[in-house]
Image 1: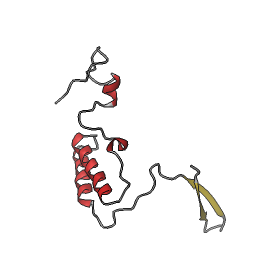
Image 2: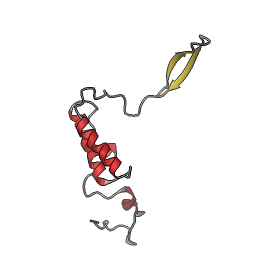
Image 3: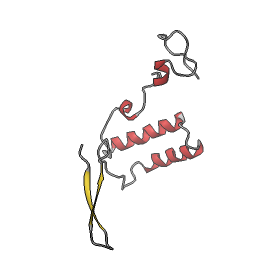
Image 4: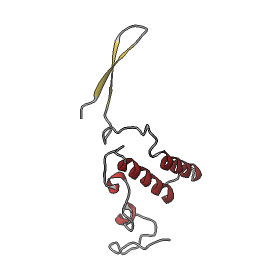
Amino acid sequence: MQPLTTPHTNFASSQLIQSSSSRPQRGSFPLDHDGECKHVMSVYLACLKKVKGVNDNACRELAKDYLACRMDRNLMARDDFKNLGFQAPGQPTQKAATGAGVGAGAGGGSSPAKSA
């Protein structure tokens, strides 16, 4: 991808100044001007505030609900959740799959133990 070049005018000297920026990785998407997913976003933000920004499973599910809402209303392109950083239920995390997770046994190839 080539960077976008945006001209800016300096009002003091009337010189043309060039700055470059790059496009988002996943393209652009419309803002939710009509507030179609605002209720889900509000609950998600309240969850983040409650857990002080920690990556909590309950908040991750709300984030997933928010993205689903946006996809359902064509506010973003439909994509698999695994491509958006979410795993299917029951799949081990990347750390657990590589044996670097907490509680990884010496067996290496055995399936990870379920935690409650």
